[in-house]
Amino acid sequence: MANSRAVISCYDEPMWASIRRRKWELQHCDDCSRVRYPPSPTCPHCLSMAATWKPLAGGGRIISWVVYHKQYFDDYPPPYNVVAVQLDEGPLVITNLVGDEPEGSWLDHRVEIVYAPDVRGEPLPRVRLAGR
Amino acid sequence: MTTSGLKGVGAVIGVGESDYVADHARVRAGEKPHDSYGYAAIAFSRALKDAGISRDDIDGLIVGPTVAYERVGEILGINPTWGGQQDAMLAVIEACMAIKAGLATTVALVYGNDQRSAAVQYGGPEAMGGNLFLSYVYHAPWGFTSQGALYAMMFRRFSELTGCTERHLGEVAVAQRHAASLNPGALMRKPITLDDYMASPYICAPLHLFDYCLINDGGVALIVCEAEKAKRIAARTPVTIHGVGRYDLNCGATSLEPRLLDFYRPAQEACARQVFDMAGLGPQDMDAVQVYDSFSCHVPFALEGYGYCRSGDVGRFMAEEGISLAGKLPVNTGGGHLSHSYMQGWNHQVEAVRQVRGECGPRQVEGCRFVHYNSDVAGKAVSIIYGA
Image 1 (cartoon, chains in turn purple, orange):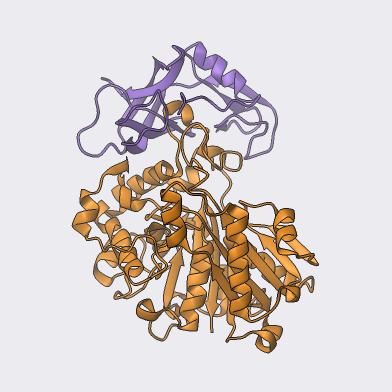
Image 2: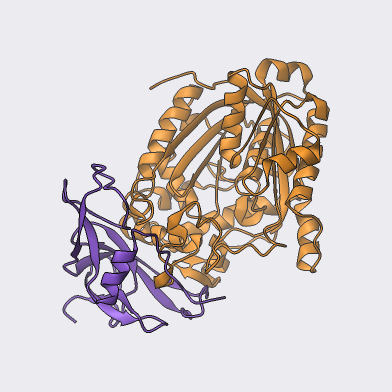
């Protein structure tokens, strides 16, 4: 086994640099204004290659969640959760819910982005229930 | 678009598999019976024998993704007029395309995989398939890898929205284990109950151990022949390929949009129109269904997506109407990937052929005329209809 690590293409580099600044940025298309994730060379909607990196507002809602009971990485001993969050800007992202967990269904709970250190001590964007 | 397309172009005249049970026992005892090429060679020889033809009758070769095309041709002594590499379902379709185009008449489809003895990893730092599907590895910083976890995320939302519960999902593992108990070639033959299922440990909740496929070594081969020639040369009645379908969802794949927002439904609906229109048949004509089941939840997604039950009703359908050999719609009649053998869709093709031939013994679906195979690996929906 080994620690988790990010897949970083040349289009991902600016995003991870923004995360290290604790201000997660994604590409906004200069032509159709759509926000895309993961980072990529073109806007999949209009094929424009012109984009501007802008920080996320930080809000979203949970659309699904799982709890791991098997270990795949040294830095993720089970049990731990993973949530799928639809950002207010549109894209779906995968992250972890930290802090309080909802009672019953987690679906549609509002969350906000927080930065928690990963195994290397670098900030990693995670979410917590909004307003907690 | 309605098209006759590949209807009736090709027929399966031979099938072969390696000895899953004996080889699995040897692998678990620390032995290495064969590598992927050895399993492929065993399956190919058996398929030839089953077809009653000789190696020199083969003029097309399509190999599975786990072996190198040239090396398989070298080992089997085949210099074909058409060759390539595909997964199970696309290999069948490509064989029909090559036949229709006049590029080959008798195509061997050959697969071997030593994934168990080679300790292939499907999750974690070296997750298999990450070079082909970015979603398998992209979310690793948050601990999210393994295809099972991706399907767990998909099933959780589906469950929340439709009311298809974990216990409903358990019908899949229980039904397929029942089928496997009647299949001497299956690895997992001890029957289980819904209570056993609910008591089994979570791997990635909401999916339990019994929702996950096996990992084992083996090989599979099929011989697909031009339909008229098939009648002349085959040792037994050919099984006709009546229709095929395909629709791929690539947009939004890495962030899991087609998976989590649509449950791959648009791909399955488009694929269903194509395959059923081509065959001139509908879901009501199918006597059995084979579903690519790396995880159990492929089954409920497919039953709704291909129109075997109403949208949002699959939990009740599985529990009340039934998907076992005794139910209304027998699904994965050999035990599938969960309980028969994990041959990445290849053994499902063999089971479909054997059901249409009527040679499945105690697990035979009575009066089986048509079998629908479908898969939705990573949102790539593929269908094939086999029939008499």
